Length: 356
Image (cartoon, rainbow, N blue to C red; front, side, top):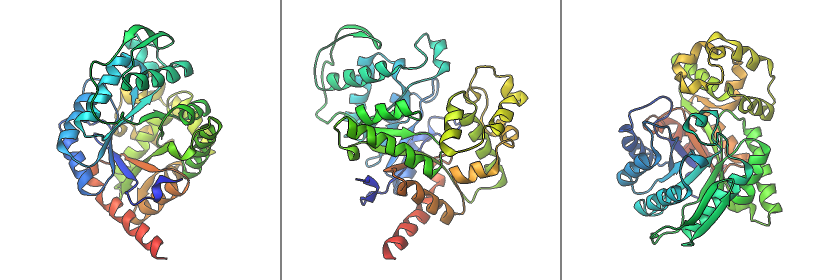
């Protein structure tokens, strides 16, 4: 079952997108998201200015209807009991509107003294630990996720546990999401065709695990810019650099989209990128800083993997992603208070399609 067929608007959006460090803007952006009818708002956690608990708590008090999701926070940066407590507290605080999206992490975590990338075993075990803690159990665990003699939450709110989501791109992560999670989050700069292929992998894995494939909700991230200026398009290309620069991640996006490797090789050879060594570009530069590097990205890559154009173009492109199998889209690259033209056009598009 495709949840996008329900009456609920299948569109959400990130708050504080890009290099925005003023976390006080999050509540106003979330209020704008609710005003224009978005279903959800999402937080990409960053140490120092986008703490998940603080930002989600503020949004929860500023809104009453939108769901509030993390997209994402790493599995390994919090003790499992602390993570479970954070999620259950936010679920209580928001009246059941919180979604916990987790990611495997990356090389940047090595500086924190934790395992940089969560293994398959850790992913499965953390999901199990969280669910057992939310069920009120005392958990004794010794394994890839750590060593814990007796974990237990002291009290539990009278609301259902939050949905547990996983960010995924590669085939193993997609299968894990289908087998063990309530939903999956896809990154930006994927074509609708790639999203369709990935959705089938997730749902096939769910079916093989004797789960209802329709119970695993698919969230696809789509860069959305209505009536972009030339400067906006330059920033769009710069943002694409941050997604394609990381080793393995960039190659996976190219493979899924059917793109040639040569432009990525030239992009990574640019002095600004080559000087980073193993550092991720978005840890050093904002998308605006990378507009020059973004010129190495073929234009058709951007036009085929984003919703950037007239509002009607945005509406049609968003509809393509939903038709490909996504249940909900997370609009990215534009704050919610500037998304109204695209959202309004999407509503008109769906109304016209229903009428025809």
